[in-house]
Length: 507
Image (cartoon, rainbow, N blue to C red; front, side):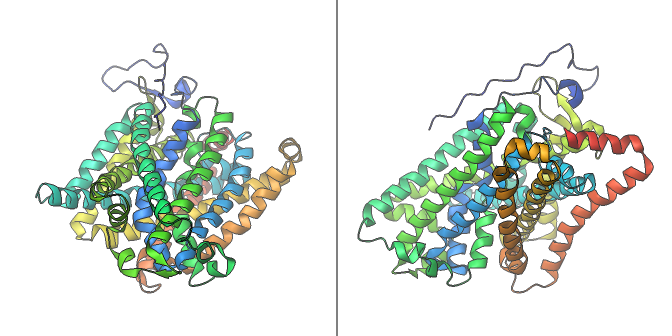
């Protein structure tokens, strides 16, 4: 796959000229029209795929889903979740033509339900993306230090590697989005190539006689074991797919590019997970029976590569898992910075976070704050002596998945409410896209949210719904409540500030 070339943005220096004594920045309001980096459908899609971290999902989430979920039928869970997200995307894309802000869920939920819920969703989104970014950067540090120890014999604390990764993501995020997109394109191309080679090698050896389709795709197989657990591991693999709308201000022809990228991302990631996880089932499950020893090993994907391609391929996979994690860190860093920019434009955060770099067109100060937040979390984890995987990664990623599904439910509901209220908009989009598809999507997403709450201990690696689980769920709810309370205070204290919030939500 050839990485698409992305032109750098052209900014009018008369409008965005550097100010004396500070970095060359300009407010979002001044440079909104000139900050577009010309991101096309392939570039935005790749940023979303990077957030999904395909190799990380195949090496970690897929074995766990098979072992603790519904066994050989686990790949079907990706299909179920993919259908739910596609229905969501149909309504969300229809809504995006009438809600043109680049605040993602902030704009959608605020417009469809109420500004209070929009700002609540925004603070929940900040919490969610900070948690998933922090989870991945902690896990990445552990992977890097393990790799250095095995290859070069170097013993480096995991948190040092995590801090270095967070800093590098911050440097790339500070600069033009085109640089991040081009880096991500190269890394994701490698991931996809590995997945394709592995699938071809497995199916070439086992097809046609050695593949039991019924053990995976029959309805009865899907209902065996714990399908609810399988669903939450599947939805966890899609965190970040909705971030296409965040790049609206930097997209080329956003009314076309953003919806197209959303559809492509959902379909592509669903098919990639479905086929690749089925290949893993074929490789390690015989007659529907799971090879638990192989799947519980931390190097399952590397062992699969060595078995079906060669030992050298296992080394390639090890390196690309690290680059997969870094691509995800970079993608979530960019999303986090752009959420802060949208909130700053709405006066919900300090206005300095809404400033754009005059040359790069990036939310400069928001990017710096996102980096500082990630570094701060890593330092806290290190000082507290928490394990970077069994505690930091499991806890942070688990609560991020819960926040993600909460946001999806609110956003999908907001689509239905907006189009039901506005007959003129509903007529323009059609009932199927504006009400039926998102309506069915809401029902499916509510069911997924119920699974996420019910099986939350499995998601965070806890034996029961104890203190850790309750604390994490309370943090997610508190993050949403912060935005709601801020809106109430804003409305009571300043009519101008509240009108600015409504204006920002309207786009």
